[in-house]
Amino acid sequence: MHALITHAPVRRRLAALGLALCAALGGAGCSQRPEPWQLTDVSGHLPDLGFTLTDDDGQPVAAEALKGRASLVYFGYTHCPDVCPETMGRLVQVIGKLGSDAAKVRILFVTVDPARDTPKALHDYVAAFDAQHARGLTGTDAQIERVARDYRVAYQMEKRDPNGNYEVTHSSAVYIFDARNHARLLATDHDTPDDIARDVRRIIEHPS
Image (cartoon, rainbow, N blue to C red):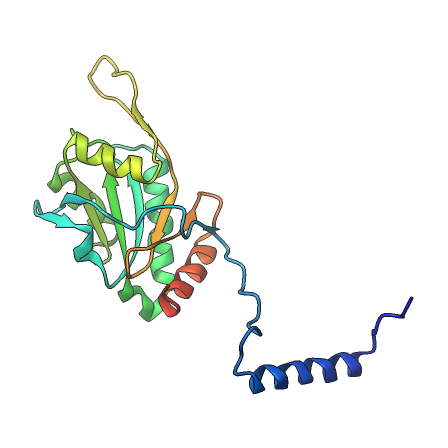
């Protein structure tokens, strides 16, 4: 068997020859493997961002009108005791890590509790985290169910307590769409703000 070439100078000359060949061919067939995503790549597996809902100013809004900025979409509710505020806090950290690119990103908080989450309740809630970049969305039960089904979001109202209060069990993933509303990435509570910010910046710089 032939011995493998292990000498660094030889490897460098071969790499240089490979780059020269790629340049001569105009780069055809010579692209490097893309850097792996930190988050879960869902490109082609989920539909484009699409809905007609009511925003936290009480106005109807269609997803089509949101093109032009990347969207970090989270399904939660304002009475959520822990996961929702924690997730929103992490997303605000992501926005802070993006620097000037933050202007190209929005957070969309879609309620899974439209009975209690009025536009005003949503407005006050998201504004407490980031009035500039966060926007609350609500709708009828049917509208929320349709959007949740499109993105495989599970949620369920739990039993009411004696005072009539209740919690809503729900998925905790964050869906990341590019500026053309294409579904690109899925972030979980195991992904750090640094990881999310790194991948969001890549989407901003290299849209699909």
